[in-house]
Length: 494
Image (cartoon, rainbow, N blue to C red):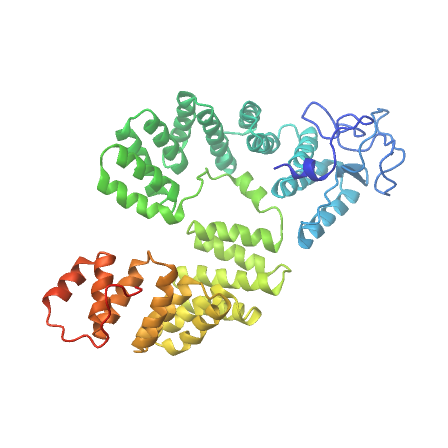
């Protein structure tokens, strides 16, 4: 999605030639360094779109003031989208003020910073313009063709993206440890693009280059495993994928592909185990890329930091998740959004074994939003786990009052009644749950145990037969169970 193009009217008009361009064409009205040359303004009377300006004696057609604005001597993209958070808008405004006083030798980095913000917000043409201005000022820097390559990759321009990443590689000093991660990332992206174009042999050559530099590169092993699977070389595929999984054990995508290879190789037991492990944590897998990470974290807002934290939480990167949830809490947001952040931060702390910090943030979430479902469920779980089920009871009931069909809350409420030795209430809650969640075998088994404990054997027998619990059927058939105080026919509703 190219929000800069989609939301800012049209990019080409009859009275103004290209406003946003590729590396060989400048935005109209701008010198190659991004300073204003001439603006025959027919679109706006805004003070940031000058009536007349010259630069270096060069004259170009007017630029579209709906797309660009002048800040000091420089032309920058006009980013005005009401969906952007106020914190991000303030960040952009602050960056524009820096253009008013920036020294020419520093303008390239400032354009690059603006470009990363635009890319993070998915204003891709605006980002491209900024990277072009950066490269004009700093032609030897690898960052600008590298970032341009990502824009082209996202837009499906595979050939251009490969050329841009290769250009970035030529500018990277292979002997410099400071840029090693960027070098490896560029090589991986070229290999990935070759693989996407159906060129596995070319892709393999690039990934082999990565392993020649650093043998313990998870994404390279993962990609070589995928290539070997395509060629039905399952032994090689398993070897690479197992190494990748050992290097990055939290990556569900690696486990999933490895499970599929095991299945194709006839190793079904290993396949089943690997596929089960990958279900909850499967997401697209990509190489570590410091520049792409800089783009992802370029916008400093609650929403952005919370999103990054969520992705790390899902990937089981709990330290990183905690860091970005903490950053999100420093940004302005509504009480409801802050409650969600505290709730998720508590969950991240819980995953690290820090129960004290987890409870602290769950309580803060509840104070901000007393009916926040996830927070209430977490607090109830803590109460149940610490031997205080009576404190969990009202929390589950609060959730169900607002969301009567919340299955997790209903099942936990039934389990809490079991803890409190209130079988009649537990049975009632399980029956309500199973009216809408008939495939929940754990709940059926718990209800069976309750029926048997209460000597309601006819109901227990019917459920055991209908939902295929052979061990219970055998128990009911052979044990001396006594009489049923509540006999029901096989037409019982359960």
